[in-house]
Image 1 (cartoon, rainbow, N blue to C red):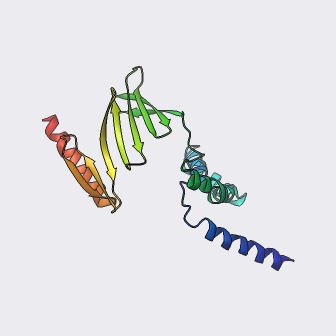
Image 2 (image 1 turned 60 degrees about the vertical axis):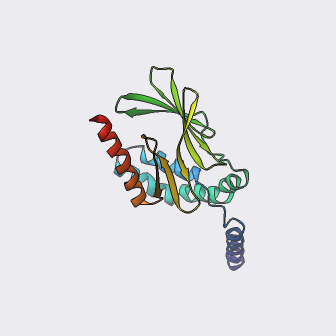
Image 3 (image 1 turned 120 degrees about the horizontal axis):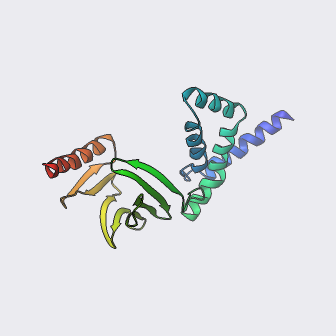
Length: 184
């Protein structure tokens, strides 16, 4: 009887692997559980909860639910059912606190105590991120199919970078140089 159950489980897993092989989603449920665990205390408490949730298989169940159900929904519908649209988080910045609201296609950012806001909007068709302020939309970044991204620098010039650590370093350097000269 146990051999039959093992064979059945193995068959279901192999079939599931073929059915969902191109369904690599964001694993939102598992990520939220990990984020919650990281925020409950110091590193020792986090480790104890992590171990307990692996013994009780909470992490395993969340991962399986993500892999088989939630990521499949995300793949076929194009939207993440775990996304917290409308959720507002307070973020501390250099110049005060900001309220960041999750939108269906990006984020709305408002400085605490002010009414003017700025939105970061993702255009799925063009594969671009845009900033919208006072009704004016400006393209910030376009992700290309060749593994590069084209950034619009503050001075209006375009910079093409690779989507890796070297590209991130080049982008930081380009934006910091412009900030440095603007500060002078």
